[in-house]
Image (tube, rainbow, N blue to C red; front, side):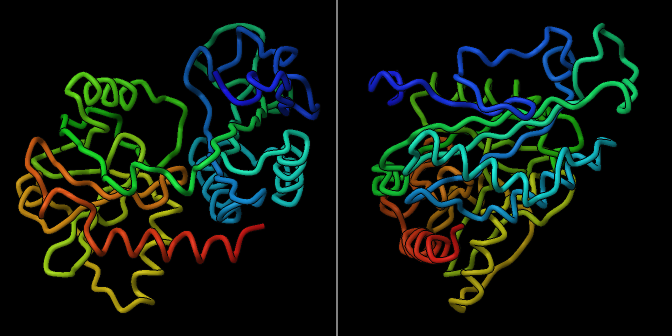
Length: 295
């Protein structure tokens, strides 16, 4: 049960220009996100009632939409105001804001895109309260991952709502008694189910280079920037599961986990099986820096 339900407070959500109680927000059965996974999303973290790396998420949203031949539903300033208003209306201190833009509901099902002049986009935003997000106990013990084949479509750089395979990956990890899964294609790790993947060897951070094979993580970009500023060595290239198992440490990054140490890969413990110094330090630096820059 989420915090809002426990306190008896109804969450206020945003839908197509209106702020509504969540139970009143309805979307058509003909919406293309529902029928075709024809939509994109972003998740922005909130710490101390402020938005983390909002500009990065807005820029990626615009890029994802463009790649699918969709327009931004509104200027970035207007989007920022909606995020801020939802934080205020829901008294959100720590948590996330989920944003989804779809190609809309043309009134029937058809593979052909509807005319954007006559079919407006569907725009949805809602908050998720997660007290203790920054002080996640998992960061102190680290997480364990399994590997699974990466059989997703070829445009992982577009943040679409087609998340069935990542969901299956998380369920496979859960079934194996682990926390998450890393995806492997042609013998090389692409990324985690909902995060970017990294290993550390001899003090050097190794992570896959940007391409259409992986999501261009907003947290990834910030963490690598901070790592460079801290004079850490970075190598952007793919790595294997075997290489990860022989690494000194590993970690993942995402908007909701920030920097999360990985202590086990496919049953092999990394180092002494506890979070390593590089991941631990990067988490500290990341949280410190993004809180300063939060809006």
